[in-house]
Image 1 (cartoon, helix red, strand yellow):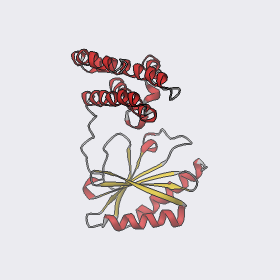
Image 2 (image 1 turned 180 degrees about the vertical axis):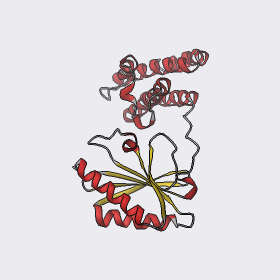
Image 3 (image 1 turned 120 degrees about the horizontal axis):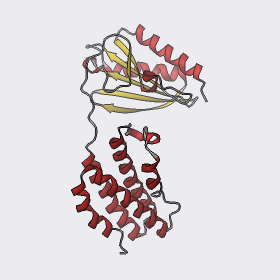
Image 4 (image 1 turned 90 degrees about the vertical axis):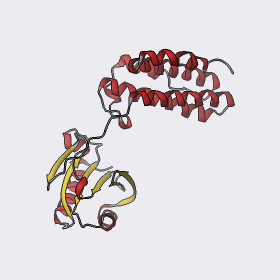
Length: 248
């Protein structure tokens, strides 16, 4: 396990390397460090802006070599957002290091977690929130497959689908209460009055009766959140969703 001091030393070294790399025009802290919300479990999150003539692939390759040779990386994976690649490294110490490599025109804040360290940032269009009505739609889609999975005796798939209903309900609740919805970051901020009914959607076993109980609880909370999005839509969904709960 890494220490906070080790994490800070690594981040400082990476920022220094960015300043010394002529292909990099700017760097910013992202994630919890950008908002002063770090704790002992936080990652290293950096965004790097590249020069207009920089070869993004070559910069990625050089920085990847650095992470393996100097800092104990054991694996990495990429996440793309627009034309920016986020290379995510796992270090032997279990520290996660996320480095975004943004082309010249894409280096800038797309949310509140961005603190410029050097260089100039370019204003970026903000990410839009997912449409609540679309989350409702995904919720009932998972519910349809939960019903068929239970009926077919595919208990692991049934649990997966029930969890899908729950996850979309929780995203809807996060949007409604104005807390972060991505990857469960704001779930701890939801009121207990919202979370208590959702807790009942957790299946305690893979027994068919228990899956059916959890599924029923999932339909209940999905309809509650749907009513907050569109009361008339919730009324239309009530009968078919309740029918999913009837014995096959």
